[in-house]
Image (cartoon, rainbow over all chains, first blue to last red; front, side, top):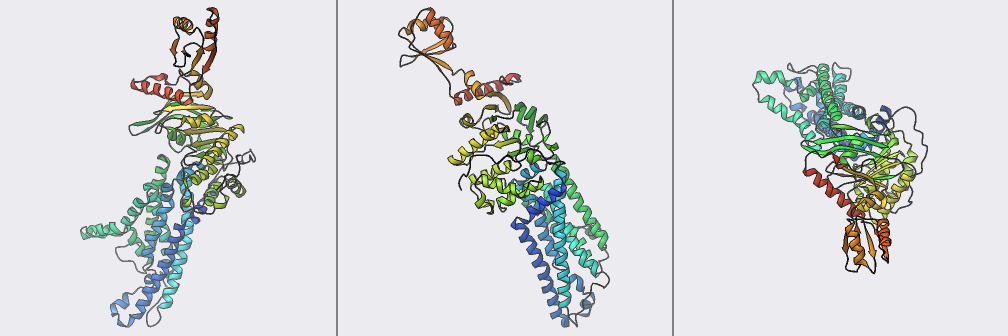
Length: 277
Length: 312
């Protein structure tokens, strides 16, 4: 590396553009940020591989053992949900991406460059959430639909399968992608509150995996009334054709999850404004 | 122009910045000088709107940072070395910043070229040396060609070539009429770059003063006098209240009387003079003297007059 010149960059035009920096520039910037780090490609790649790969494994396995399955098992078999089994792993992966989108800025100090370029902090968080939601929604829906179609194709007769026209099937497949996207936003909100990668991922994983264990240890009447509010159970009721008696039905469940994500983002936004960067 | 009035920042019990007032004018390089931990970086973050002051106010060209229309085109800052995602390329880092303030892609290429980073622009920044990271930070500050520039310890980690480049850059930015604030804990660095210094200690303003004034104000300043009748002259100077020290080489060091007074006194006696030479203290000595004062002030509660050089 050598010094090519002693002079500062040429003074171009002094007059500033009219108006003010705004949301569209922030969206473009956040998109650039997201596509120029490897963690995005890694996590989204994992989402695709797990989402589709596990669908193939689960449905092929079911088909192979169909003849040995009991009548009860055959009757309760949900071909749609089985093909969407990857969602339960994809939700962990999307959480990591949602956390990293924010925590990596804090970990590397990029946040100070970001907030210097665009000091209106709520707008920064909104742009970040919007770009993240856009990208993950598209990817998760694609994964969800591919997983469904591949899974159903593998469930050849005598095993049963569904088509998108069957009651609840389209809702389950589309809802699965949406669930992943909203859960990712929840993680993004958590990271804005916590600001540290390890802490935020721990909190996210605890919400998904540890809290259900604690709840199930409670007296059963209490546990039953709480369980339906847990994110993982909401996800389950979205992908199941017939959610259990104790669960929310798909859309109210998704709405509740949206409320969780919105709460995390609003709390994160308030803290972002109040705290020193 | 940067104007701070009564700027105060507390972290828990610790007062990081205490009632700090100063003005940074365009067209000169203003050094921001103080020992490590004296509140320089905190002050810079408050100027940039990153930290909120507990009291007081700071504006850039008359606006609060938060209200700037095109922040990167109005203020540029290097706040910390290597504040960049290690997995992102230098180019992507600059481009994502440029996009927020509608700065064209051509400008990104232009500034990268200026610091000689073009060839490594597509490499991941994690591979950069401290010096390259520092250059990238400086480039990011210049990206929007702003009128106001802040550099926090810009020469840290740079090789001699890089240090010279930064010094010249700062001077030429000031020559172009820009407002340049550059922090350092080294007086020697300020001596070669700054026209004016804001000196702080433990978050308080010690002095805002031009380098020239700082030197002339110092008590380290003295006049060297040689004369064949040195004893006579010394006695006369002592009677006038000057402090005199006879050096080993036979010269007399005089404090408390300038060369004009000494010359006139000598001719009135009369005494022949062989040498009458005003001597400056080194900048380092002048700086030490000032910061020592501030240490003494802090021993007593609520001495408000620590800013004796204000308005300089």
